[in-house]
Length: 349
Image (cartoon, rainbow, N blue to C red; front, side):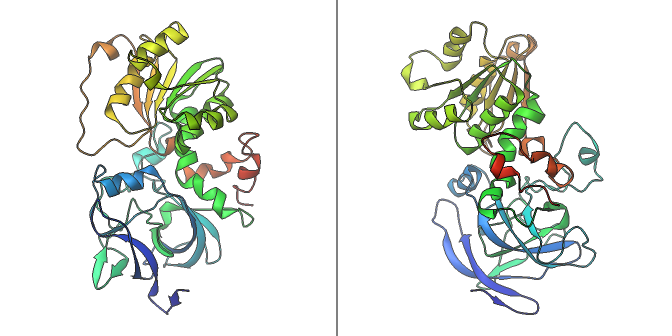
């Protein structure tokens, strides 16, 4: 059990000292929250592929670092001026903050608050860290850092949830589900009767499948090289699944033949540049829309024929599914039959 002092909390955390090396379970010191900050006791945390991307070196971040960004917990203490939550509240930390004042926050067109840390400073808004280990400062990860028993976030990066919420389930709202579901509903705005293809059937990809189903898509095609994922994808709404390794021709040609005219919406949920271009080329040449959901490698570049866009396709990115979580969290209640029990606890009373 962590030792709680009047100012600093000593607890266990999984520290990544350098890329391509295993995590090290260390005792860390977590400083108290400063003004407009919240210290959270993390009780459940998912593991997202983006965390692995940092460990592999493909998503550049400063080291040493405490990763994790898909979690739920209880507020332990708050800094001066915090009114949105109080000690004892169940909360979800948000890797995409919502200040409510910047151009993105006040616009219905985007959700990437200027206070986000996707540019990888690894620090709080005041330019410092709240973590130390063995006398060394430890970086934060995208405003959250949840692979620790306690973390500190800015008040704009936390949302209160219902006291009855099962934290081991709703922690997935902190990234995986919201990112995938929102990409279909908010970013693509999938229409009833449309045809969709999802490249990658992991947790986020399956959430895209659910979003497409809720939107009323008539055909939902899952693409993955792991056939073991197909049964779950179909259970959640996919109408068919295909493995690119079963064909000798490019997957975009396969999809073109399968649908007769390519799909209305395609989603890349892997984070590979080759599948991003394949997803773009698999959507309708004139009015198709392709959404990049997977995090691309930091140093990657894409080369493609500009005629692919000139003829009318739309290529878009989606961060956190276009969600404004602090203001729209209640919109998740009872989204689908499959996840009804999951979400009925989501909205605070």
